[in-house]
Amino acid sequence: MATYTTVPIRTAARSCEVAWFDDLCGGDTEFLGVLDESRRSNAAHCSSIAQLADQLGFKNLLLPTSYMVGQEGIPFAAAMAGSTHQMNLLLAIRTGEIHPPMLARHIATLDHLLKGRLTINIINSDLPGLREDPAFRYQRCAEVIEILQQAWRKDAIHHQGKVYTDLQLSTDPVKPYQQNGGPLLYFGGTSPGSRDLCARYCDVFLMWPETEESIYATMQDMSQRAAAENRTIDFGLRIHIIVRETEQEARAHARHIMSRFDANTLNLKTRAQDAQSEGVKRQDALRNDKADADDFVEPNLWMGIGRARSGCGGALVGTPAQIVAKLNRYMDMGIRSFILSGYPLMEEARLVAEHILPQLSLAQLNVLQGRKPSSTPITPLTTASLR
Image (cartoon, rainbow, N blue to C red):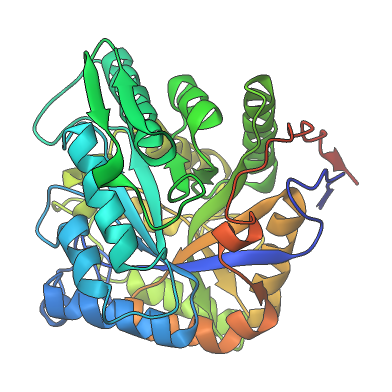
């Protein structure tokens, strides 16, 4: 097992933000690949997930975005402002869908409704129904973030770009509740262009499940990119969880949720917009090249979900002690945010809250960061050594 010579990113303490996932895009089910009519992605079901996660003590809640049957994130987040009270909301925003000054206004309004309990997941992907040049998407995403940051941090927006030209506006209408720079920006993406965007502009780099060595190599690369920009970033991991009292029971549930999956039928993976993304392809390659007969690629890391679902394709599977030990290893590597989920969402949230949350030192990431990104450059992470 690898031992990591760790350079703490912001703190040596094992404190972390543990978020849950809401089903705004559809797919909550007992059996992967099977539409569950009792768990449709409607306002009532998604609201129940959000309220339960808040009551159980999760510190954030990912609200994804997709042009699929389900709920749209911005109005849903506004609806949840009055019925959640403790946790943050991590709202996914696909750049380019809303004119940036108006997007700044949407986000600022939400931030006030939530009294600062808002974080943003920046999505840089093709707009629904379009196939766009990647270089154009990177340029558009960078300009949107620049405009948002001017709107939240300066007295006026003065932007002259290639995509958005000659914007000259007062920022009085778009000042957020969080007056130290606005909501934290989370960002995920595997391509070099995506990594550069995150290193230059964002606060948290989100990753999908891979082996520890692969994750750590990505963190090294991102740390060096951020240092070149004289910035620091935090790291997050989006991963599913199957926790049971025994490892045999946990593995049995993994088999259970895949027991009705038919790879020859249309499923959420094939119809999802990110099904051909580089991150999904990396997970598929990992499973094809490294997995055992049960789709485990290292102890307690199961990549079977990626057969049925796009996006996050792996799960930690095991006992409470095994999963907490794995989360501690990730924290020792420098990860401080975990976005968890399980199938079905509400039932698994209760199990994670019972078995995992009490064993962790929990905090919201904006609190861990002092609600303000540090200006101290990060020391690049050192190379992992195997022992």
